[in-house]
Length: 377
Image 1 (cartoon, one colour):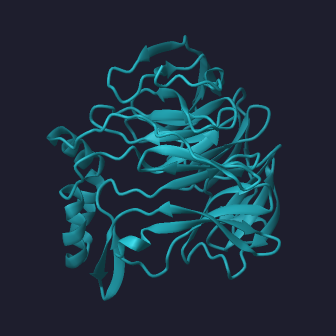
Image 2 (cartoon, rainbow, N blue to C red):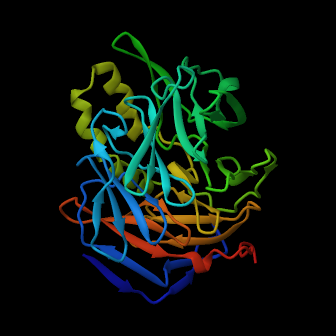
């Protein structure tokens, strides 16, 4: 059963000079789910207050209604036609449909409501195993993917990766932009080359909207660029933010977040253990604006960017950026919240309890998605 909550809206102005916008602490209405999950990989919003929730640890892919206790399994787990072996977050499409990427069997499943109605294999030109990752879809025919180099290089002139369109009908690939890749170094592990990323290393990222627009989160300067469906681009304005120095407190905060890594070090090969242990020591002088899996489309077609968690700002913080590339609002959530999905009028987060179990929450923020500039006012 879903527990409906009505929360009064409250706002405050950020105290730091990182922005001059109002930070919405709570939305007008939200709800908390009583159903427990071990790990929510993502949420895809459909129509009529319904969503698909993916929990890969329990192999659950469920259709849910926010205002009812109804739970229906989506498709079936397996390797047969229209079956999924390992659920990940579906990609929302218009109406009541979505795409489920199946990297194990190298195919895409088309979901309509609770049914998997068709499957399409990846041709050899697009292998998710060999350097491709899908970031979204434009309709049911075109994927938006990132192509990572198969042969890594430390050459600074090769510090970018391809953002491209992939046509499922013709198998044609069309590069549309270059994204700055995450910094790192090549190391030798067990006779093979591996790519080791230092702390806070993050690549530029992209996401798609259901109407064909593509948003790209850029790092330096921090901004959001937009690609229109006709192929033209809008360069976003630099988003003003306070440059956070990596103080002793911030180092301790990061080390605590990465504490799981320390537990893995003894089991690693010596040469890999030596490099990985530097992740807790070899830190940059300043903290980047965002981390991995940082951008999604939602809220009237605007982009949402998840800011890097810090000791000074340990709460989930989302920047709302309109299609002119202007930040129009910043949302701050309660502690121990993780962002898992976006919808037309709100966002989906999970709250973790003391046992490590997760419950889904929904925050209605659509009334804040007005297309006007509030930054720098």
